[in-house]
Amino acid sequence: MQTTGATRKRHWVIVFAMTLAVVTYIDRIAIAQASPLISRDLGFNKAQMGMVFAAFGWAYCLFEVPSGYLGDRIGCRKVMTRIVLWWSFFTAATGWTWNLASMLVTRALFGIGEAGGFPNIAKSFSIWVPASERMRAQGWLWVSARWGGAATPYLVVYVLRFVDWRQAFAIFAALGVVWAACFYAWFRDDPRTTRGINDEELALLPNGGEPAAGQVKVPWRKLLRSRRVWLLLIPYFTSSYGWWFYITWLPTYLKESRHLAMDQSALLGSLPLLMGGMGSLFCGFVSGPLTKVTGSVGATRRMMAYVGYTGAAIMLVVSAKLSDPLHAMLAMGLASFANDLVMPGAWGACIDMGGRYAGTLSGAMAGFGNAGGAVSPLIVGFLLQWTSNDWNLCIYISAAVYFAGTICWAFLDPVSPLGVGAARIEEEHR
Image (cartoon, rainbow, N blue to C red):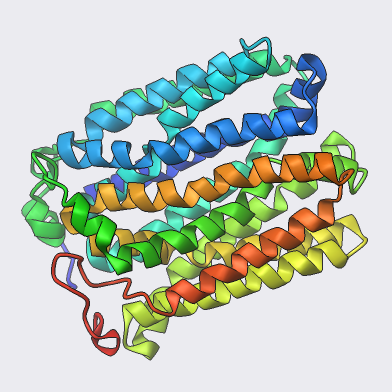
C-alpha cells in the first residue's frame, strides 16, 4: 500500500503501547524478585506467598472483560488513564502492607487496575493501526512487555541497594503516573481530532479513522455461545499457566533448587522474559513473509501456535533434566521463546474476530487466559508445601498444560469477524 505523504501519528500509538507494556511488567514482576525479602519480613510460607501471587492473578482475570468493555463503550483515553493511575497507586501501596490480609487485598486491587491494559491497547490498535501493520505492531508490543519484565530483576536488585523493598514499590509506581499524564495529553479516541494528522494517513486507518468507541452494545450471548471464541480462550489459559511461573516463582526456584544468590538469580531469571521477547519480535517479522508462502493469515497463525505450544512443552521438560543452571535456564528461555510465537497471532485474532468489540473480546481472552495465571502460582505453592519442594513436578505439569493448547488452534478460524461468520480456512485473507 502506498503511504507516501502520509503522516505517522499512528506510530506514536504503538510507542505508547510499548512503553505501557514496559511499565506494566515492571510493576507486575517486581514482587517476584522481592518475594524472598517480603516472605522474610512478613513471615510468609510458600503456600501464603502463592496466595499473594494468585490474588493479583484472580483480580486480573476477573476484570479483563469489564475493562475491555469500558474501552469499547467510553473510549481508551479515559479508561487507560484511570486504570494506570489506579494500579500505580496500589503498586506503591504494596510497600505499605503489614500482614497477609493487607497484602492480599492490595495485590487484588492492583490486579483490577492492570486488567485493562492489554485489552485497551488492542482496542486502540483496532482504531489506529491498519490491518496490514497489526502483526508487526503486536510483535513490538510483546517484545517490549517481555524485555521490560526481563530488565525488572536487574532493576529491583539495583534499587534495593539504596532503599528497602517497601520504598522500591513507590519508585516503580511513579513510572505509571508519568505515562498516564503523557498519554492523556496526546492520545485521542478519534484519530480525526489528532493535531497534525493528514488525510493520507487517515485513509490508511481502519474505517478512515472513524472512532469505534461509543454506545456499543456487545452481543454477550453470541460471544459466549461462539465455538470460535472458546477455541481462542482455552489456549490462552494453557499459555498463561506455564508462563506465569517465570514472573512469580522463578526467583525462588533459582535460589532453592539451583542454589543461586540474588544477583545470579536476577541474571539467569531474566532469560525467559528476554527470550520470550525475541519470540514475539521474531513472529512479528516472519508472519508477513510466511503468509506469502501459506497464502493465508489464518494458516500462519495456526503454524506459529503449533510450533509455539509444542516447543514450549518440550523445552520445559528439557530444562528440568539439565543439571547446569545456565543450560537449564537457556532451555527455559527457549520455552518462553516458543510460547511467545503465539502471542502476536492470538491478539491479532482478537482484533480481526472482534471488530467493534475488539476490546471486549481481548478482555475475554486475557481474562480467561490469566485465570490460568491465577491458578498456576497457587497450585505451585501448595505442591511445594505438600511435596517438600519438588520443583520438577511443577515444571512437568506446566509442560503438559502447554501442550494442550495446540489442540484448540487446529480447529480455530482466527481471522473471520464473528459477526460475519467463519470463512473457509483455505480462503482466509488470501
